Image 1: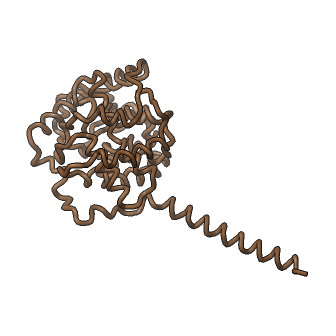
Image 2 (image 1 turned 180 degrees about the vertical axis):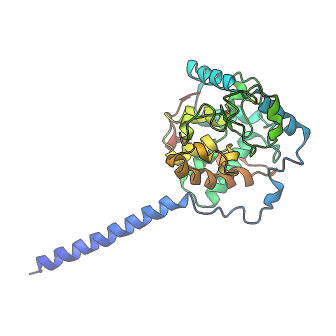
Image 3 (image 1 turned 30 degrees about the horizontal axis):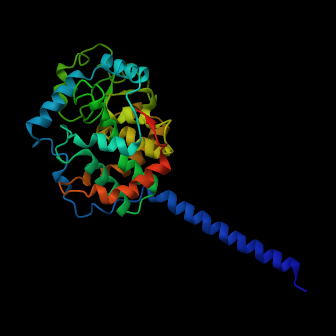
Length: 301
């Protein structure tokens, strides 16, 4: 007759081993998204974001953006977002709709947006990152649909983002072009904290309105993306913060936590850019499957 006590002990030990193994797998899965990127090891990174050598198209774009992104405009843009819907469609259809756009603020590529989105997602996929991060890379620039939904130009859709309502940081590219912004000499908006309180958190400040903030607001209640994925979308153009270290005086503990997610995403957004063509038709089935896992069939835009 088997020893029940011994058998129970063995089973209990085996279950404990299995449980530890599962915990280890889950731990590995949780670390994957912030492992150092591998795809860009051979890239010459000095050639990216070279704004000193940028063409006039890029420089003129930032001059206009810096002059027109005011507190008044940003309040108006947010009211407009909440007051109407711009369209109803699935994510893949939104990508196809965006396919005619070339970003005037970008000195690194002239490809259409769907090709940039697939380049980003494929780089994340090649590095073995989790599916939620792959699909985040795939959709991260879909906010540029604003260009088709009544934006005032490219200046209120694309380009690096920054905080409005306080002093413009000297970590923003072409900082001298802010001098023509009406808020530049304002008695409140020109101070270090402006209309904000120390460590109030980025959720409580206004970033310059554009595709990042728009898409975050579209997806936050219409997707199954984790907090890290939503942060990658919302802050991927916020270079003064995630690359240059600005605005730390406005950040709280949540911001310090999600900063690592935005920084982990940045190499895929930036260094995956090239002028090599992407076979959209070949990649479509895989990414349409991912979209179905993380988004409803139809979204309000």
